[in-house]
Image 1 (spheres, rainbow, N blue to C red):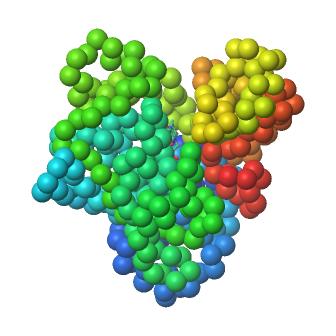
Image 2 (cartoon, rainbow, N blue to C red):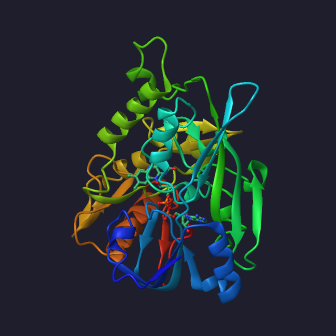
Length: 345
Ligand SMILES: Cc1cc2nc3c(=O)[nH]c(=O)nc-3n(C[C@H](O)[C@H](O)[C@H](O)COP(=O)(O)OP(=O)(O)OC[C@H]3O[C@@H](n4cnc5c(N)ncnc54)[C@H](O)[C@@H]3O)c2cc1C
């Protein structure tokens, strides 16, 4: 266990904004999280769980204790019968390192989720997804420590109530558990998912497509489309793609025939938030060092010295303009953490 009062949280968030907290405590195993909680009995509202900081907007001084589960274990278990391999991974393992490690071992299943920043422990929180695959498609179970009691609980996929960028940990159990370990199902033989448009095009000429090829293609597409946080501070998609009713979709489609939308479930449509923002004329919009990326309108960026509040101001401008023009409310995908939460997450 390592305790510190970091002078700056800038290295701990991919927006690269300046922020501070009361204390940061890093744990290398589940038992030390349990014993610390049982000994200290901290108030729940005095804690925040930090992963890799790639889905956060931090606002100035945050008067909380940040806890980090830095558990670094990867264990593969090939199943005797069939094609399955179970992998159990510590919460502190970098997600993309896990993807590469599993591919190097010859196992497939995570290739579409290549290059998503952040740690394994955060992956179930919003059911990370990309290029037609979501964590839930590979998820078996997770272990988590309850902050209030220090007790360990195991969660099945059903317990997690996964949805689009959603799980029970964003709703009923928000801020109640620290995830320590995740178990996923991989395959010994490749079963590629390349239905997603750009991926299909890129691999169109290949015959026997390997998981490594899919991963390389995903990495190439992502690098061409998304700014690298190491070069330009950002937290990926700032807003979720809004889901509207068929009626709302029809009204919008009549007014904007070029509207980008996909049918989801029964009588609902998912709108491309990036398209709405671009159509609102805000692609490349900038206020000082905070702005909307000039190639990817769904991504807000820190051009250098923007504060969390500067970025939040731009986010509000985007949300208000989209609401005014289309009557659609954009909700943040990013967690906004400060003295108070301004957007619902
Ligand atoms: C360039 C870029 C591209 C991205 N692309 C995608 C994408 O394609 N798909 C996608 O789904 N996401 C994407 N994201 C968002 C981000 O990568 C994911 O949300 C990721 O899972 C966040 O992981 P993290 O460790 O950085 O979590 P953090 O940002 O540190 O935390 C996010 C949330 O998870 C909670 N949390 C973190 N660790 C734990 C834990 N161990 N136990 C309990 N709660 C915890 C935090 O309290 C917070 O609420 C992208 C981000 C960037 C910067």
